[in-house]
Image 1 (cartoon, rainbow, N blue to C red):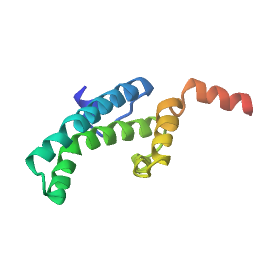
Image 2: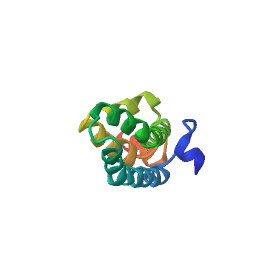
Image 3: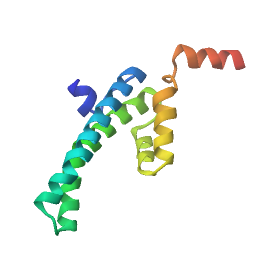
Length: 119
C-alpha cells in the first residue's frame, strides 16, 4: 500500500487506481472538514499565513494524487508528464476519469483486440 500511494515507479491497473482515488477523496474530505476550521481558529486574521500552512497541509493529498496518476499513465503507455493535465481546472478532472479511470492499459487484450478488428 505504501508503494501504491507514495512511489512514482511502476504501473498500476484500473482497480488500484480507483482504490488510490478513494484514499485521495478520503484525505480531501478530512482536509476540507477539519483543516479550514483549525486554520481559522489558529490564525483568524492572517489570510496569507493561513494559505501557506494550508498548502503544506495539502501536500500529502497532492503527493498521493500525483503518485497514482503517474503510475496509471505509465500503465497507459504514456509518460508521467501527462499528469500535469490535472492542473487544468475542468479538463484535467475529465481527462483523469476517462484516460486513467476508464480506458484499459496499453497493449492489453481489449485494446489489441480492437486494433486487430479495425485492421
